Image (cartoon, rainbow, N blue to C red; front, side, top):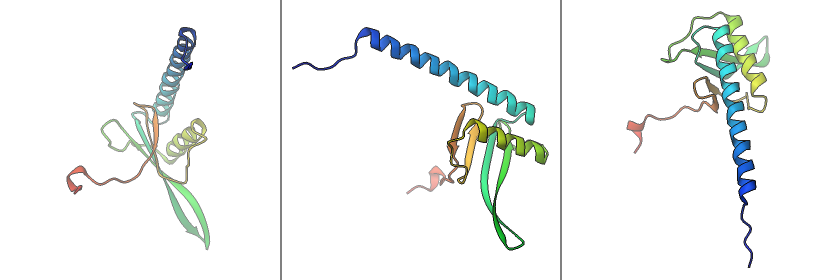
Length: 124
């Protein structure tokens, strides 16, 4: 019985494609980090949390944005900088579910759902 196996040429093509994707991801991460630093110098982590507000009886969904530095301390920035950072992430990650808390780390280039977790010491 014949078993399908990848040929050397196919494996080489996949390796080249993987390397191209990795370069593209590195470039994207560098661009995002540079733009976040231009928006609010020192920003390494952006946290977004959807917040339901009640204005004059109308329910609205707003987004709270926190900008943190590499140590996890808040970066001093005005409202426009928070809005710009959020807009940048929404444009760069259009498929993300922005109705859930998200965190973007400029060092790793990862956008993840920001779920609260229990400290390791408290696990049974």
